[in-house]
Length: 291
Image 1 (tube, one colour):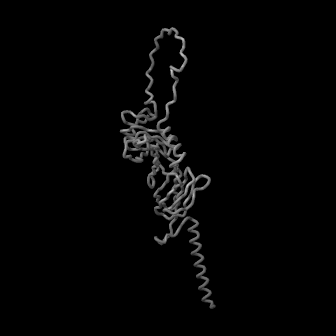
Image 2 (image 1 turned 180 degrees about the vertical axis):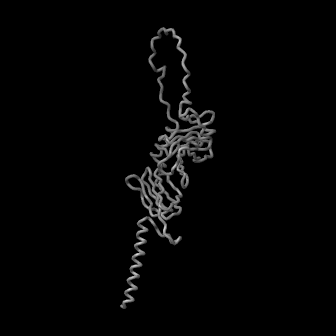
Image 3 (image 1 turned 90 degrees about the vertical axis):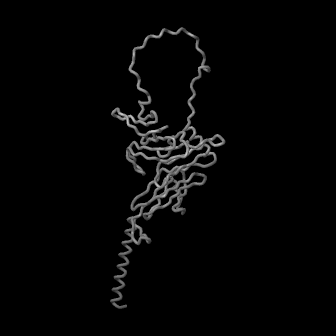
């Protein structure tokens, strides 16, 4: 082998080593080569977390199951583009989104709710929702069942001094509806009109959101900034969805990210149908039918 050939081999090996080192460094920093675009892109990831152990699919391809602890899974090393992610469990509702991955960012979906579709768990779920929307009034003492006291002479009532009228319990609340208008009592003593044609409202368990509904629409307003995705600022309002039939009632369900709605006409068996609606509209809105 001549000296010139050895020099060529040496410089070629050095160039290949440098190129491979560059590629390895890029991959270590989260970059990935796109053959369709013929260039390197910094990858992104998708994080999902559910209330049940489940299987995770990416573009209809099974990836893995959620972790044993925490029921979470991270899909990493994704090139920037749109993916379809599905989370499902046998005999449970499924969850699906079209998620746009961006360079260097994590798409966080950590409040996924999967609900049973049949069996004893589904029966218990239906009862849980019914009791939430239409709680049974607490029994009050019945005068007929209580022992009757011996009649006694009633003392002559004394005239009471006049008092300042007690403010209405409605206006004493932070939020109230009057003539179909949703009001908020401000700290400065003034009132703010939030929405019109309102038939009902509910404050979220964490106190950071308020939901209201009219005949067919479900709305959310954020009362403070959120510290998790999707990010919102205080005062943001969003129309979550419209229903084809009248909303009878609604309530927050299990957390501050899902609402259960009674908007379905009663079935022939006399049982109402409910819908559990997530308020995260990124990539599509998941609504679970409870029949």
